[in-house]
Image (tube, rainbow, N blue to C red; front, side, top):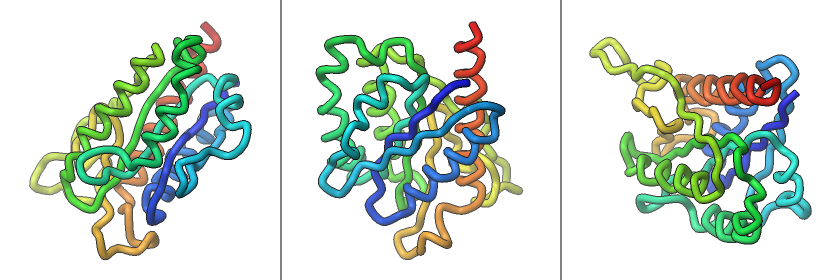
Length: 192
């Protein structure tokens, strides 16, 4: 049974809501265990969290996109993994990612590229959404993968939306589907 960690920062609660949806998707796979690790406002994980990550099968990274990249709190976490990188402690673990911003684009692809690069520095195996985009005239924010993310989930939370209003259901379902996909692939590799 794979153990999959979600490591994320959320400044206003919207990205936390997306992390919860990803966790729901993970738990939808038989036998998968979800471990949620939230980075605090000072950029720190709970005590012992880095050690916990050494024992998981997959790590899903999440951060809001601020000014075209990840939040500084997430970057602090990433830099704190340098010793793990040097020891190749996360090599061959599965990785995936998600981000959220107020704008439809908001340069979210840059944040996902950062998360992907972090995973590749660690020698991880990246898993994208595996979803086609909802890109016809009939599609809108309620549809799965409306923002067209392939590398990872790109959610939209308008700047004046509460956490009850955003991310919208289509983005949350996209997060659930990513979690489910990561759990299924982790199970296959574990059985391998």
